[in-house]
Length: 123
Image 1 (cartoon, rainbow, N blue to C red):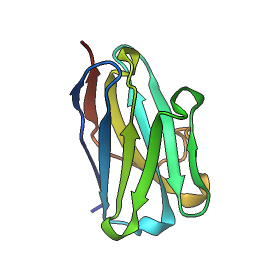
Image 2: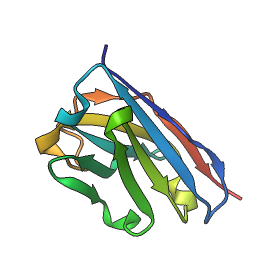
Image 3: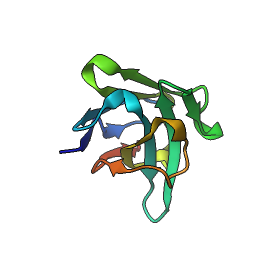
């Protein structure tokens, strides 16, 4: 029953923007933190950002000032606004859910994962 579905990926030029969406169902949304992760071709998965009602939001240093994570509890959805995108940020982007006290960009406490949405940053 638990489901996380990402959308909003696509092709964008360097310096451009995308907004990714994560739609959640099958669990009590307010009890969980939602994180965003990405995996570049040939690279390991990297945490980007997390949001929870308890702890607010956090970001890795490389995206601070460019990416913004938001949530809409009424829609059980989380969004990632990505601005000034760089070619090295090409990859598959995933959302995941963890108990809300474990809001983190570290992967270990996340229980549920989406299938990912592909982002390509290229001219």
